[in-house]
Length: 237
Image 1 (cartoon, one colour):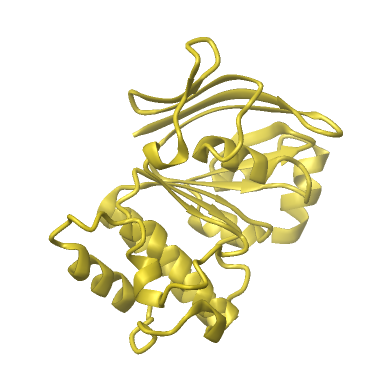
Image 2 (tube, rainbow, N blue to C red; image 1 turned 180 degrees about the vertical axis):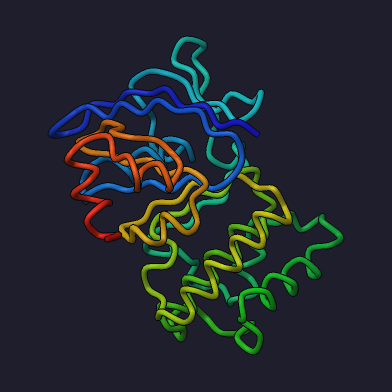
């Protein structure tokens, strides 16, 4: 399924100009803090409204300034993992994981159970977020996003709070799920090796602009300019 983004939004220090087409696979977004990565992701999810442009997933229009379409986040069928997890504090782990699944879905309990098992949350079903570690909360967030049967998965620094062993395991799990479900994934990261491992393509941003959008191998071997080389190349030598 093709994600098409062509938007502009005036921010405090610059104008975000995001124009891309991404067909399936995992797209990693790299760039320094404040370059517009999260704003772009929130625009796709419908949490932020661009000034103009359009956002489509397949043949479904999420946003179009020309057609005056701006679908609500819940109608876009996007799974969104916030950097701060954004779990419901008054819900247990099981309730959080199932919060995006319709109560009418006969497979609801089965889906919740499978996601809890997949993300190694067994035994924590009745715990509340306040009793969980940061890594456990993050796993609940990922499980919740995937349990809702999203058409596209948007993740803002999804592995930032995890220890190295758990991080590697979760990265491998995301790759397995992508191959199994064929879901489109767009993720933000500051970890260059993480972007290269998970991304079928990697988008490098600076000051609201796309500097380079290529395969990890091409970005590594043929950085578009000195900025990309400094950000990516030197760190992979």
